[in-house]
Image (cartoon, rainbow, N blue to C red):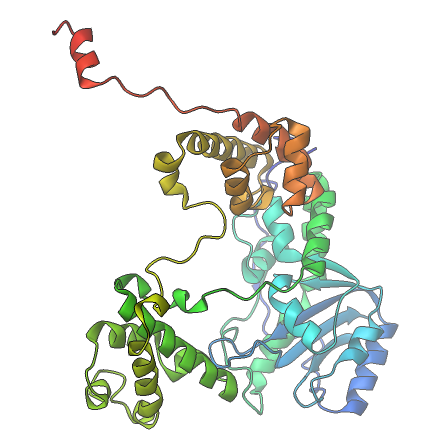
Length: 431
């Protein structure tokens, strides 16, 4: 069990920081064909120890979340940079070469789906970002962690680049190689703090949960995430947002372009609020009057007309259907007892977070806490609460650590109501 004195990283000063501008072994040639891929797989298989893995996508530029570059580094094999597109989108040769090897990734949940898409799935995992959260580092980005623990400043500037671009610029490849240059060293440094704090078992369970996580289910109403939707109130206007969103999404997927590059969210909301009467009114609006948008004007206008042709029953409601408890700020009116349980649970978890040096959301997810407090088990004892936590997806270490605190919180009751005005008057000697 983590103790209060072990809960936070040591107070030692950070080592002097030096800039890492070039990979120690230089930038390797890009793997772009089957022969080079087989050679890379053989080299990695003959290496020793964990393998550092990273992937670059083109978020904000492409609709898909595919990997456009995969970087690997292993002791004895050096760094390997692979172009999955040039290799036909199949890197299973690399996955097979690394069977049984621990893969080290930073924020693994972001990269594992695109790696699986090209045939790369780890048997063992170490996530330096997630480990850093469990340790309690104040900043867990790759750059800050590398500076804090290793005294090395990584090159910045290309993380949000369009990695679908070909050919890839030379300085981008330098950046990509540096991302895996020190990842195994970082893993060792974080692992040492996990061990010192008694959290190694926690981390192992978390890593396995990430490794085995199923893809998230599709959102029931993804259009409700349109930025600025809070400005749109009437069902008829919401129908316009929904149809424009769907039309844009369909075209974005077909062209493999980020939806916002076809039509910004702000333009969708603007069209819903302004309610243009004619196609010409639409193309006279900001954004829609641009050359690229005028070529798509018929598409956008057709979406608006479809929305206007819906019956009132087919128009969307102003609020999304709830999956689970209502928003916490409404609990006081809907169920004061549940609100008291939630307040007590949050206070207990905040104290536990301070004692262990681990963020509350890593001790147990806020959604799980809300669900437990809204509909607690019939038996609110620690054992039943622990079972409920595990049934809802909590890891064994989380259930063991929090069940007793949460069980106690489930017995909380609302504070006594304030005296009425008449009672207050009587207390003060009035009639």
